[in-house]
Length: 625
Image (tube, rainbow, N blue to C red):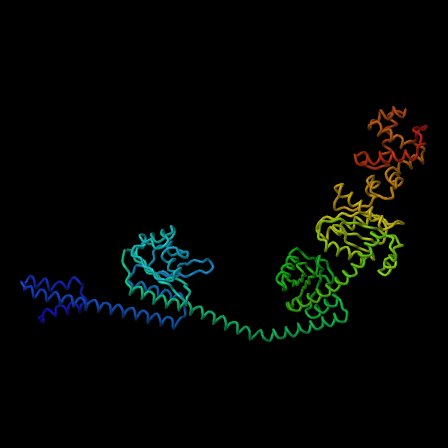
């Protein structure tokens, strides 16, 4: 090969001519009439020159890649802003691969998909806001499999799952060829680095390797940023720890001192009031202790709204003090049931002391409850024997040892309920203990033997209080024991409760006397005279004082179907006299005496009165009304 030809090819290499220009020397030789051997020699020289050209280009590209990787490493070493580093990596990927666009998606652990983190060269807002589910689209496939993927024609590639929203965004961006490589931290894929072209093109293995190297740097940058943030957080925590160690030590020492004082009080027989006094002495402010129903046991912090009781429920669920406004609330439960709640209004927010006080109060209440339950069992067994074995020896002595004098007036109350048996039994036992009586649970009812009289009033109060405790209706029947056996009074009280339920008065309380003529059916005494007296007494007394015939007129009025004219005919008096007598009767009996239920009682009382006074005249002389 002669020198001038070699020089021509070297000149072409020197000025980085295009591959087409290397045909120039061959064309000139043919035009000059060179022989075939010379032409063949030129062809061989051209091939070698093109190989040299490709080698120089690859080396130049490799130098550019190494320079970019070096710059990226430098960025990582001086990491200050993660966004700036990631943007630089994506921009270098676009430049080195000579693509129209490059972008990076990161994994979102909360939503389980990937989202666009950085883009370079994007023109579509929809594409920049795109999210890719795992396995969807080329980027989702790379994130799911942790393997690089490349496609020369995205829409014609069936290797991955196409989705309408992804395809629409890709189409709007105008992308055709796409290459994606995973961003990996160990075995975990945290995102995908991608390069794409708006025209079809293949991606060579060298380009895949380059993009993978940049992705590795990006993953390191992300991890370094995380570590840097964790380091900053740790330093901040250490600085706070230095300030709080002394405060914590003082708080622990004060809490231990308060706990020792409360424990010493309990060992000396102190009560909840004494524990509350220790808390307010240490923390200041005012403290209230509530029982399981939210009723105050000790102290007062003013009127409490529903939010306080919601905070108490939250405290029991969390096992910690809960703050609501200026109140600190600590509540303790046993077996899911509230036991006690402490409510503190104070500027001192030492929650440990309040929580320890709540536990001490809970232990005191549990001890009291255990004692009450033991005493309740003894009282219940005695009441069961009085009902089931009334003639058993020693009942009076057993009652006397419990502070119950069976010779004094007592009332038997039977309460029927559909609520929690344990709560109802506990309520009944508390009532018996406080009022020096007896209580027993018998299936779906509780029985009380309480000192006193006025069975109706006792029944109404008991029904109201148990209904409030159970948050469901409780019906009470009652009977004065008087001179009869407790067993007989129990049976009458039980029938009264059943009669109230049958009459649709569930949740009410009454004795036989309050049940009107129904009381004659359920009562053991069958006090007919008392019933007549209660219903008709005012009219009978008026007749006795004035010598009138109001009772006879009333009987004739009901007997004639409520017709004044037929009443007048029956009694042989003027209809005006009947009207006047009825007016007088209405004043004596009160409003509503003609209402059906009241009229029925009056008619029954009239019949019973007539049976007991068969000599009562039907008519008398002049009637001074």
